[in-house]
Image 1 (tube, helix red, strand yellow):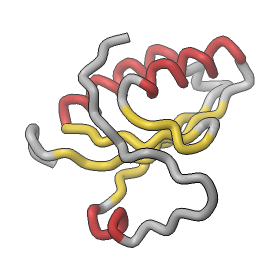
Image 2 (image 1 turned 90 degrees about the vertical axis):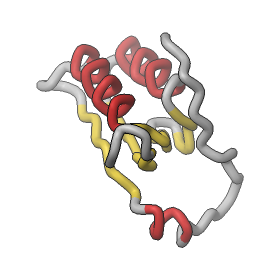
Image 3 (image 1 turned 135 degrees about the vertical axis):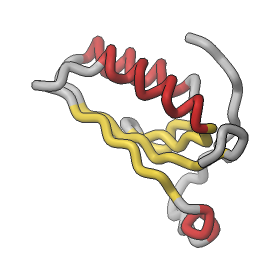
Length: 97
């Protein structure tokens, strides 16, 4: 991924801490769209991905939490199947939290 190209990422998290769960959700809301309670779709440039990874690393307690990031190829996005309530497109807003 070049600096100017974007990539869709699916990011999911799990933590036993309500406080960290809120902080993770608030952080990810600044980068993408919540599609499930603990799942976000984010369209990120390489620099944004690296910034998000640094911020997530500071929040996560390795012994208790799990955060996973999956890149989604463009061809897979075109084949996505939506069942149930639709969620809006993934907008990028350069917000800082």
